[in-house]
Image (cartoon, rainbow, N blue to C red):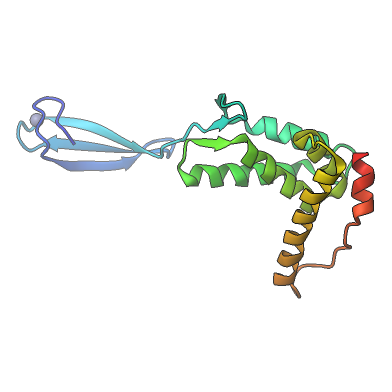
Length: 178
Ligand SMILES: [Zn+2]
């Protein structure tokens, strides 16, 4: 670390301790050239994530916005707020760990849709029909078949583990969009 007094880069750490809030490590250093002391702090870098919208505009990542959108889709459905909050926290942590500063709104939308699909078909349809603004029912059904196929192959992988869940019918979902 460059000495703030003489600019030498040779120093030694003489003391190292955790800050009161536990969020930083404070280090006392001594310059080996001029012998003066200075302090450095080390803390986890918080990435201020930006969401890239379809038209290229950027806006700060807002977890509450995602939660609100999901809750709206889950209105009067048997899905707890806790489940949704946990999902968003997990997703946010994953984005933080990735270390990139930007995420496309499309990726967020897709992730939310997949999650809702796992949780509740009706909530999924509500969200998807607003989010995707499908041109027609056929486009929607194509997307849905894709999702179902993925889900089936996942189920095959998990076979014997997870609990049995009745297969959603395309009719139910179709009804939801019309
Ligand atoms: Zn110095």
